[in-house]
Image 1 (cartoon, rainbow, N blue to C red):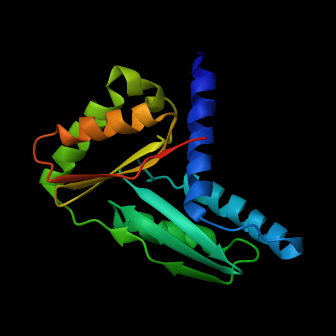
Image 2 (cartoon, rainbow, N blue to C red):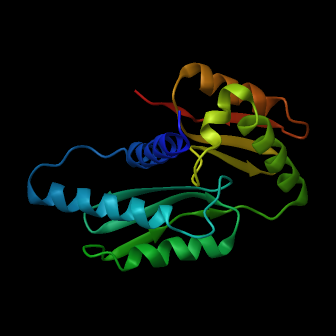
Image 3 (tube, helix red, strand yellow):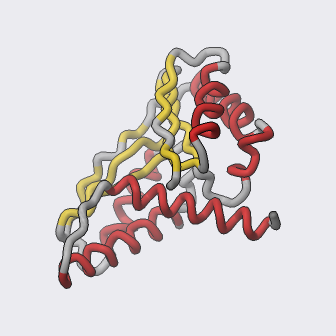
Length: 181
């Protein structure tokens, strides 16, 4: 596959992950169309955040004119940037920012780098390393790891979990990766 195709696949998986994270039910009529437009714009704004990395996971829910931001980030500025980027979207009157800022920890930083190398450097998972926004999110809090995002197969999900469990200093791994259909 060409580099462009890999990028398109990675970007598509990330957009799909954002859509799946919504957990929204279908709404008919113009309210449903407005809500779908808000969801698309929120997804776009979050993907464009300059400090959004593989070690951050931001999800959202849209309920009418209220957007609830969820997830975990490594930098406090990312939490406020996410909220500020959503506030200006037409049709959004309120942003409920429930994003958790992970505590700074040199040990967690070492675990993050080791996990990145173990997951994205593994031959069967290298395809996910292409593109700017990686589809597998690595969240580390006090040695406890959570994997978020979307992968192509159950085998890739299991492989990422096994690779994460093999890192020294990791106390537990929660594998929340979803398999795309």
